[in-house]
Amino acid sequence: MRFIIGGLKKTSLLDYPEKISAIVFTQGCNFRCGYCHNPGLLKNSENGSVSIESFFEFLKTRQGKLDGVVITGGEPTLQPDLKPFIQRVKELGFFVKLDTNGCNPDIIEDLINKKIVDYIAMDIKAPLEKYSNITNVDIDLDKIKQSICLIMKSGIDYEFRTTVVKSQLTLDDFDKIALLINGAKKYYLQKFAAKSDILDNSLKNEKTYTNEEFCQIISRLKNHIETVDFR
Image (cartoon, rainbow, N blue to C red; front, side):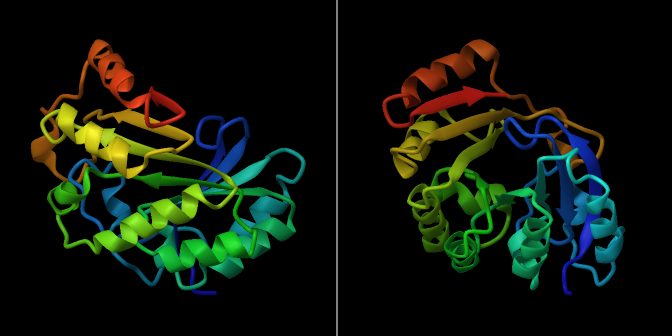
């Protein structure tokens, strides 16, 4: 199976709403966001830190103790055998949450149609005209829009989320994002927190908005999105 695991967190109470989960970190990503807090996962690799079989041996010992598995990255949809990996997880009776940047709508659509993913969290990096500035790569914006549409129409639980560096996103930018995901169920603004292991060290002195400012932003977005919050 061509599925590279770059890391494993055996228990999380936060990453899958209302469920106790294990988190699988996939190796490799096609975006280069400066605030990325998993820079060690960005490069493609033939070898992972956890083997497929050892992961499933671990997972079998957690049946009845964990509710679900979160598959994050890196970018999971770059893994050639993402679908068979998820199918094995589902066969053991676990819920599956997929984190994605939305770059591969065809894969997202296939997983939805096969009914093997239970929750999708998609990162909205910025309004479309700023995507390349934030990700530091050229983006097929039609694929981003297609992924948003697929997720919103999927019938499964989902959320959109944006990591917020104040210097990168203005109030007008949030208005544009709200129009991009107009009618969405859930949208979360994630506070940027400088860590020792972010990709672009020049961002370590950057700030996010204050709680009061986040509340003001939320009030601007509530007419477009059912639930908006920050975390």
